Length: 277
Ligand code: C2E
Ligand code: MG
Ligand code: MG
Ligand code: MG
Image 1 (cartoon, rainbow, N blue to C red):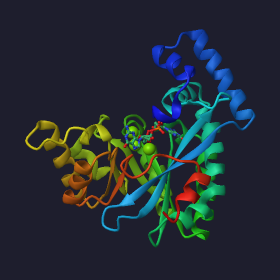
Image 2: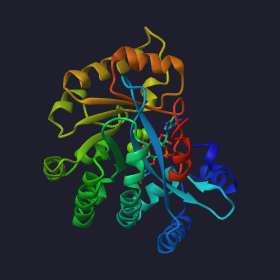
Image 3: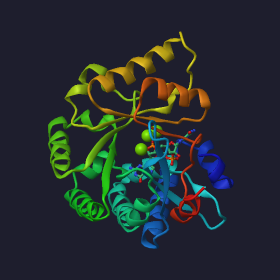
């Protein structure tokens, strides 16, 4: 996000979203160095239950702090790590951090059972090691009465459909929750939603950015949420920034909301200070 990611790096990368071969190569090297020296950290964004109005869970979001105090945003380094395959090692590092942080997140969570959600890129599904690690983190989460959730995008179901589904089914059988991230901006058709082995639908913030009743955008958001709820999926709305968006989520009886209106992603230490606000 813009606020926590000032500095020249960001401007440079934004101007240059189409990185040249050499730039990509140097990014790859920098990511590798960053991983070798454990530079990547995790911020957590609290997710608020619509009924309870308190923190029901957290999304873990990768952060890459730089020496000048700025952050290279995940929108820059995650796509490169996905292209180079480095996302597998990066996800292993993220999962290790999350695993360490789970007992404290359990204390900050305000509902009976807290969930912690981690983004998992499609490439990680083809590497057994990430799946094994997920099982380990899940076992540790259970000890803290925390539910581990993974967020996958619709692209996971585009190619290699059956094996991704089988893997998700196996993870769900263990008690790991599966969420579809950024729902609505991908390719899967609404009518196929019921076939996907997922527990949670995260409605992309693009869907709720224009909430003027009567507009087509409004109708689409409204219908997508109704359909997901009718299919007995839990619905989490992303990007809640305003009172009006909050009211919409309440009216639609979504399960949970995530957005700057409530909390920005924060380091664990910062979250612990918020605890008794
Ligand atoms: P995402 O998984 O959809 O995560 C939500 C993004 O929306 C986060 O951006 C979060 O900071 C931002 N956000 C939350 N509430 C609001 C709001 O009210 N307004 C606005 N404008 N933005 C909001 P972030 O942290 O920059 O991450 C961007 C994307 O990078 C993530 O989107 C996810 O796709 C990817 N990503 C981040 N961490 C990881 C990771 O550990 N692994 C993988 N594979 N992808 C990651
Ligand atoms: Mg996500
Ligand atoms: Mg999302
Ligand atoms: Mg998103």
